[in-house]
Image (cartoon, rainbow, N blue to C red; front, side, top):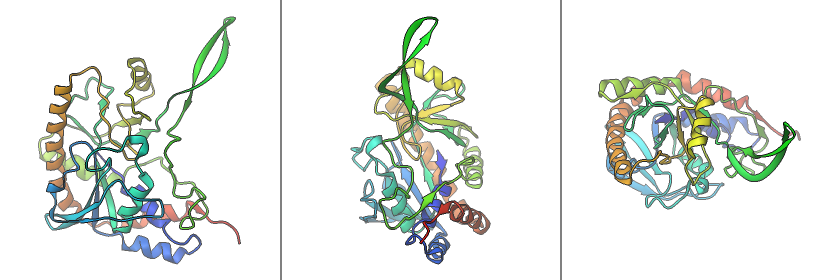
Length: 308
């Protein structure tokens, strides 16, 4: 489980007509109090919300994965979005991540809490554990292209590695007038530390087996990693693996039965629901002005607008 409120604020600060910094300021200033939830496997159930209503929206980047579900958790306004659609019909590579984040920003969210089903790369991270990730490695898997290397007079072919190039990773892609310029956003600390601490403390209070940090590697999918690839990812420092962390969801489990996977998913969904129902009211009662101001400043100074 991860919070990507920082990414949301980055998106919000870019929502103006390009060179209108006052517009960007006003949009970010509105982002207080709403909690966005991007639900993956087992946690896209709108039943966790009280007084829920559906809202279908469109964005400059197309339609999000499904309708936004608006409601409350203990009097805190929340917006739930099923990342793969409520029927789970959208593959990780086909999720419209830009539209999903934009839609939540437009709805007034200041935080996004994201749940992902992951495969463990460490013996100490057991099925059913919760990991509050603090770092990520962009998905790097072999492509079909081959290069050749001469080693000890023998030709050895090896795979060319690439990141998740199938998925746009910026609003500033040059094709939308709502986001003009170039943005170089820092991601040394990709997840909101303050929200992570709330999640960690709440997990402890609920008696959940929780790992307070971890590095996730996101692979393109739709296939799972081979055993050799998983061992390689471990040497890179990854702790868990999925297909959707920016944000995404995946079931990437090593040789286990379908029954066990389904059982673990159900147990994890119940744990995650308890964590959300307890954490969100606490987030809603906290002071976030300084945190939001710092994130807004980071986003604004990362945008390079075109010269006129």
